[in-house]
Image (cartoon, rainbow, N blue to C red; front, side, top):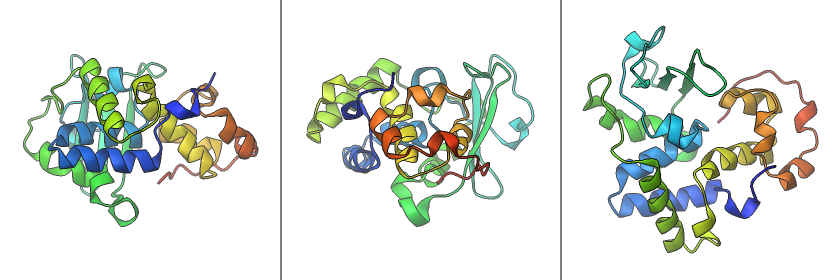
Amino acid sequence: SPMPQQWLLTESIMNELVTLADGMGLHRFSDLCVLSWEFLFRVVSEAIDLQAGSAADITTLKAPRHSAVWIDGNGAIVVRLVRRKNRPQGSLLKRDCMCSFAGESRCPVHRLAHHLSTLEPGESLFAMTGSQFLSQLKRLLGLLGVPAASSFSLKAFRAGKATALAAQGHAYSKILAACPWASGAALRYIDDAVLCLNQTLSFTTDTSTHVP
């Protein structure tokens, strides 16, 4: 069943979280938050171990590499994952610059561009564990006065973003494509209250894959 809505991150909380973390000098924490949110990552298996890469990784990437992240020639951030839970062959994901509507602090392209330029292919983007990231998340949510801050889990990113997209009225096909994930799996993450408000979600057949 979907997570309780009070344990979900929202666009508003994300803005406050990133602003607070950046103000405290926790820039890599903010980077991880933004990537986890915008790409709907499973934080522990997909986001924490992200590695730098290059355009040479666009067609193939072999184990023991976990992933490859780079900025392409069109100014988009690209992530190739060697494998995923429902896609053993891996995934190639891309997000365009979001500065015009989200601001630089929430744009994964501009947040990560400099950091990526300092890394060689295969080097880790982050030097923290999932438990360390979660502890920091709960601490900062507590500082922000977010109710039930100690009850949040790392699923709050994936579930929160899926719920936010549903609340904005995006077609179910767009939400599936944003991750991507197996058909039907997203419903386990989207809050029931939002589904009730947006009853057309499951019946929409719009096949466009652009999600802001």
